[in-house]
Length: 257
Ligand code: 1HE
Image: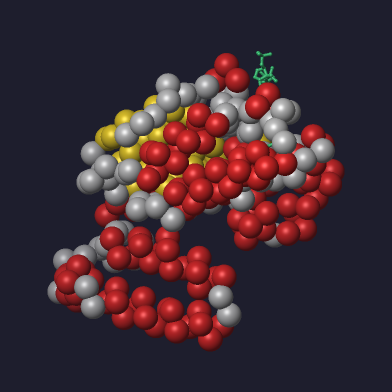
């Protein structure tokens, strides 16, 4: 796995911890980091069942490294945006679910990375913004596709029109993050969730990562057909049959246990 020093990857049993490690620049994402993210999420080691992405220092990420942006021409700009799309697709449509653990600034491209993950945990200090509006640019790392699905188009447009900053608590209410953690405890919460995710049948995690978003993007007729197909595939697996028998014979946990 080829990773720059600004991306630290550590495997703990079934969980891969991926840390953005550029705190002196507030984890601003330069090209090296984008390519590192693409490489890590394209080559998840065998045995890993869930990944966590988080940031070193006071912030998750200050977004795109603006110092690399100012000299780009049109065609370079297009290739750059498509590079982000490629890398973030590896997170969203890779081989394992990814939990984002957020704190401090989660802005611009940082918010785009978090939006590509499957579950978000926000520490109290987290704040969300899209400073692209104020910098005279537009989002280029997939936010216009992914963010409206989480918080709605009007809220995303407001963030860019007015520079609105969203707090961790507001982010929960808007649907951006699914869990709030006290300061310093986000990673622990992320690991707890990752361990649960790792226990699922792999076909269920696959369906949630790869089929559910396609169903949401399609019309009702195609969506319902895809649902029937994946429901039948999952329930026919030996793993599902074992889990169903375990419940029926009193060996499995009840809901909420
Ligand atoms: C940076 C960046 C950056 C910090 N690119 N160097 N993102 C933004 O517009 C957000 C810009 N950053 C900020 O508003 C603030 O830095 C923070 C609120 C995130 C943090 O504030 P603070 O007081 O903790 O740090 P700082 O003093 O502002 O920054 C420390 C250093 O990091 C400083 O460099 P230094 O050499 O003077 O020490 C900053 O210049 C540097 N730094 N953020 C480059 N973003 C796929 S397209 C996505 C498009 C976008 O993401 S646009 C949004 C960009």
